[in-house]
Image (tube, rainbow, N blue to C red; front, side, top):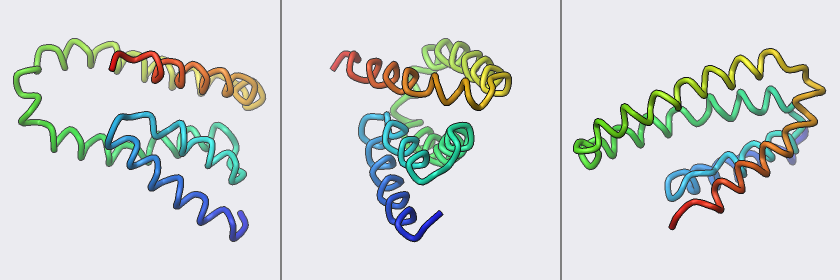
Length: 120
């Protein structure tokens, strides 16, 4: 990784963090930045996912009081989220690097479509 990738990744990290704090979807910035910096797509995916965990934990702690009356809804939504994470991890491990490289653009497009199609 060259000297120019470090500022790119730092800028992408701050931008992704700000986007995640406001609306979510920061991975649409940080993941492509990692790939542009030369990381293989699988490595970029795992790095990006692990890097987001502190923000998720911090957000959960910060909003715990506001979400206390939503506990049932959170549990209901957690089940498919956890199952999806397990299934996605298994698929990632079973997919060859070349296959993952080919489907990544479609996954990003799908994620962007989901973000754009959310009710306001």
